[in-house]
Length: 451
Ligand code: 5AD
Ligand code: SF4
Image (cartoon, rainbow, N blue to C red; front, side, top):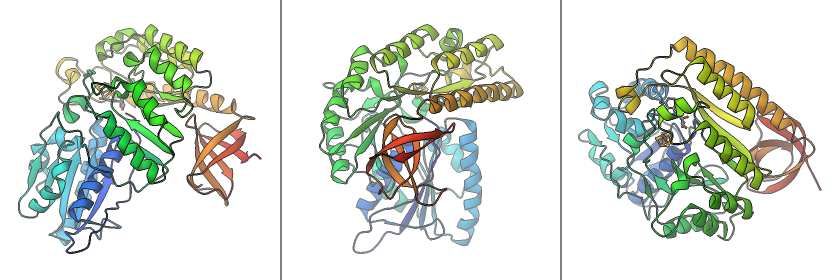
């Protein structure tokens, strides 16, 4: 998972006949939530709901939420208190909270915020349309986890971008001591490979050239007959798909077959997001990450040996309980050694329900967490800028996403290695353009189209 925060426009197909009302979905959190919102739009569209262009116009407002850190939940609580005023003006409005925070807070959410009509966990979306209708008369709560729910046969409605998210695995069995995901998303399960292939074929038929496979520990994917390297090979053969990405793999499930598959198959992007969380074996042990500093570094070495052009990113938590200055120094040292292309960096946030919350007191003071985070960000920013500078002079194939925010006539897109590249061109979104890199910042590469 990563911490990408997005708000996406709602689009639900309107059906002929009596509309059930219009829906606006606002999405918080990771790509899995973006994908789940697309699934929700599919369910609602099939049932006959229409889309609303804004929250103000909507008959139903759903927040698809995140619970990974306290801050994520506070954001949603703030948003809900704003929406309360909308509800006072428009009493028939259905206000729903869906996703991880809905499961995490469950009844507490309804007790604390009686104006919320609907609380729906990540395994209840199949019943979404019925529950919305029912919640017009009485508040509805559906947060039971269902390890059999793969959402087979439900087609997402994609509204955004040039990349198709495809959820191939739901839930997580790793139970890292800091993490709430196994409790709010349930046990790990893989979507049948035939169903994944079908979904990717649908995406290709809709014109998508790039797919990103999603799972909490996506490389432990196994549907009983097909494992992750095999799945990647099958998907890279789908007609029309030029790029296959995946996120997030777990270091402990990264075997040599997977490395060889990424190296061998052209369509698989040479970019891996490999969450490390800490550079100290002692801390990793308390986090129950099941690998050591040394085995992580050895994995990075193997990856780079087999795939020399590989771009790497990571997730890091600072201030996990009892993280000493020495442990933190080991994290800095690992970051200096690996030289990630970029990193998502977080202060540890204690989450109710986790092993750490029950058994490992949150000992590092907030000020210390902040100062460690600041030093880490400073280091990684410098490295990102240096790594990006090394691209100057090279030619990258860029999949155009749209017009750049700054600079007339400029477009932006992503390279195979997940670099954002900005250049002047009239190229349309969803085309692949070769670009020579002429300059770089910490976040972006700038270039010009080559012949
Ligand atoms: N506190 C801080 N960061 C967390 N993450 C997961 N749980 C927590 C927590 N309790 C981070 C991890 C994970 C990313 C998605 O969020 O780094 O990889
Ligand atoms: Fe959370 Fe660990 Fe599972 Fe990732 S692998 S979702 S950090 S429990």
